[in-house]
Length: 114
Length: 110
Image (cartoon, rainbow over all chains, first blue to last red; front, side, top):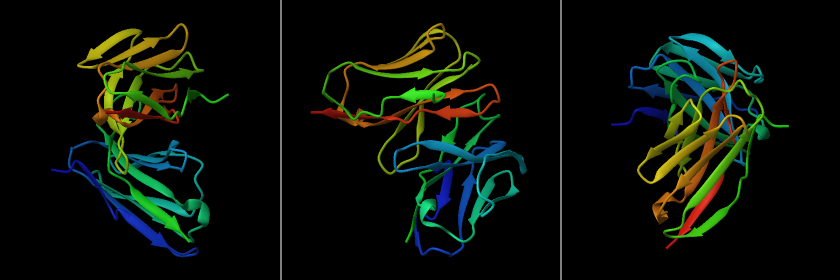
C-alpha cells in the first residue's frame, strides 16, 4: 500500500515543452513538498504546502508552478522546460512542518530534458 | 561554507564491518537531526531521528549527536550487503526547513 505515490516515474521530453508531475499521499499528512535531487545527489526543497496553502517557495524559476487541489495531492507543472531542469523530482509529506516531523518520500520522477 | 557538510564517498567496506558516516553543520541553532537511507532509484526513507545530544540506538544502527562540536554520526554494526545505499543526513535549521547533506554512497561487499 503505497504511502506517497507520484507519476510518472520517468519523463523524457524536449526543451521548450510543458509537463506535469502528480503526487498523492494516503497518510493523512497535512504538509506536502516538492524536492529536486541533482546528479550529485543534493536534495533541495522547492515548495511546501500545508493543507493546500503555500508555505515555502524557494528561489525556483517561475516556470515551476505547484498546485494543491486538496491536502492529499500536490502537483508540479513545469513550463518551457530547459536542459538544466533534468533531475529527479521527489514528492514528500509530513504530519507537521518540515523540521518537526519526518518526511515520507515518493520514489521520484526522473525527468530528462533533451 | 555549506550549512551541512557530508563526505560523498563512495565508501566500500567488507560485510560485517562497522561503518561510520558523519556530517558537520555550521548553525548551532539546529534542533532536529535525521538520517535517511536512499536505495538506487528509490526515495529516501527515514532511518533515525533525534533532537538531543547523545546516542540513539535502533538495532544495528546508532545515531550520535554532538552539539558542542556540531557533528553527527551514524554507526552501522555488522554491516550487510543490503545496507548498500546512499545515506543522507538532514538537519533542521532555524526557519524550520530541513537541510540535507550531499549523501554518502556506501557499498558493503559480501
